[in-house]
Length: 111
Image (cartoon, rainbow, N blue to C red; front, side, top):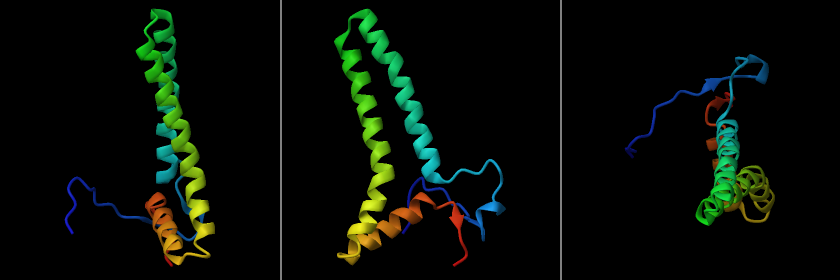
């Protein structure tokens, strides 16, 4: 199926993590880094809202920060929880495997 705006990529074939370039970061790391960056950028919005006494800016900054924290926790906990539940419901285990392969899409372990 043709997907609009999806980039063609070739995974890096590796046998161990030592073969990777020193600056290589998998997809989950890039997502986490961007979320942390957005969380830090929400802090000046909160400060500006409290200095200017604009409650909308304070609310927006706090909402963004809560979203970032929720997303970071979900990124680290949800795949593990899905794997655990997958022992009893195989379809959940399959979805966990698909999620893991998407998060580490840039790596090909050559299995």
